[in-house]
Length: 267
Image 1 (cartoon, helix red, strand yellow):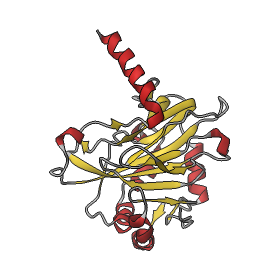
Image 2: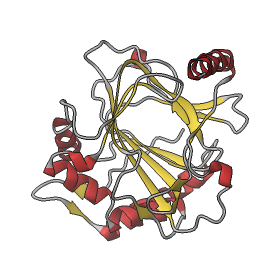
Image 3: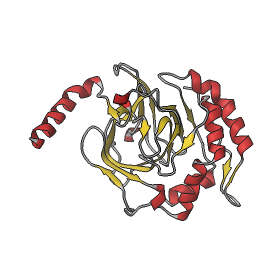
Image 4: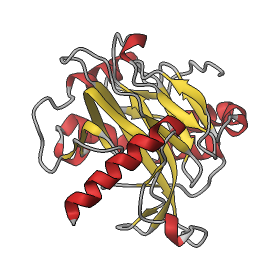
């Protein structure tokens, strides 16, 4: 895995400044790493945000519950996970997320990935701030392909990790799996200010399926951002609206047992 240590040209002081030309050049400089990556196009960038900016994001991370949070407590699709909308956060975080949806960010991503005409999601459907507690996990999956509210096709994910002093023994690796779901080809530890960007299609299988082994007071925190394009014609109707969870070989028996248990309860 190539170690990229360039920093996104978005500064906090004296006020939020995000230069479009610099953002385009930054994306262009990394494009070859992105398109050549396996098992699907992606890149891992260290020190993605300036230190003062990510420190301020972390200090504004909501500790208390916000309005309309999504909680995932059971099942392969996620446990002990909290999903927070930026639209329910502090004015500072709203400003930051607006910057993530701005023209300079789109220019950076288009140059990086070669995907033109990217569209942000002002509603942050499924995205925003994520937090998982000790014992929590997220099963391997490929993401939903259609944003029903905007009627646009999902193309890219960005994850920025907010976990200072994260230890390897805590786990929480983002796993990238092959198309056949036989082999994990890459594991990415969710360390502070590390950014992962990757294409989303029916075969971009990813997740953090191993339960966290953190102390109870330490959680796995991240920013999740999704980007789209206007055309939806190429999407298989069976792939459009749902996230497709895909058990690993060692999960298949336990997942089958779990699904049978849920089915029996519904009868």
